Length: 268
Length: 275
Image (cartoon, each protein chain N blue to C red):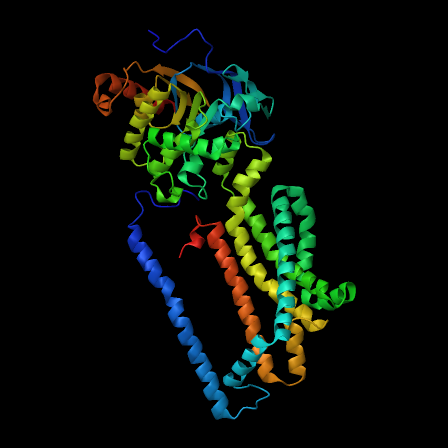
């Protein structure tokens, strides 16, 4: 029944009782009620939900960008948060991709992609070589020397993915990475992302509010409901890989999408 | 900021570049024409109005004097000291303005405590303080350097603060998620991101530094173009005074455009560096 790749090794990410409160003491906002979730090595998990359901909050806590109010979060067996304090050794296995590409406009594409390697002190020629290889992997070969402003939105996002992959983290966290792209580019990027995921074997958590994107990409969809944010249902997507664009018109795909749509309508 | 460019391939680059070239040529044609017209008008006015030589000398006489100034080592010596005071003052203004600016933008309590004093240094008429500087720091070049620095540091400071505060939160997230150290965040994100703002501060600052140096020279000492100008005026040598005035303006242009070149070298990626 459960097709999720369950190996003997530990899960890549474990959340237990992770909770988040925002705001001041007088006007607290409960962004995420205590949540348990574990993500297996190599699994593709999609967080889906209406705005305000805490999906981005959840992802940013896993990414080491905001501290949970309480709970325990481990990444590759390492505790990520020690109270408010982030443990740097646990972050090194995480790569983040945001809704905006967030490329630095003063760096060429190759230097943007190699930025994490530069911060780690890798030599220039070595990291340039790595950047070229990654450009080819994400399909922007030949654009290494361009400025970010010279690239289209989709290509910039590819570069952002390459940057996150540059230091070879085991886990990729993606916060609505294709939300700002047009529908056609978005479909193409979904196919690309699936290919990259299958090529590299990364563990991916992706946040989206697009049902079709979720069903197309995910091994497992975590549906969150708002006010306060919590896990509503978890849906497995047993559609075989590699999935092609046409899979969207199959019965299996549409059944899952419909069920999600109905559930989303009920909770938001 | 990075995502402000339109989605899609860049619109025919060559065409845009050609238009850029044509627009870039325009000032090289219009400036000499307008300048010639202005000098012509000046010449005609002096010739026909019979205005006293002590009020407005003829352009040809000023030109002769300027040529003499350029070939006179004494003139170059004065130019050197004005340039020295300007650049030394400007250098201090950069060090203090950028250093303090970065600190203020990062540390909230520093901003709150220092702001009244920084504003105070600006609302006091600084030119009125120049005689005091002369008393404190003597008639030598030091007092001029200080006046230039005091005038120039404020725009550099405020632009640096603005620049560091304008850093994209998304860019910060990238550096945070990459575990960057504070120094790396400064060197790889804050500094390059604030650079367009800082350079704008430098552009205003360099002009104020020249003004500071020259005003300082007006009020004391025996060196510099400001001093030379006052001497010529007191001697009613109007041709030479005008020549010095033009000489000063050209110095100002030169320094201002040097910052423009700096802009293109340091931030070629920024919209302001493109024509």
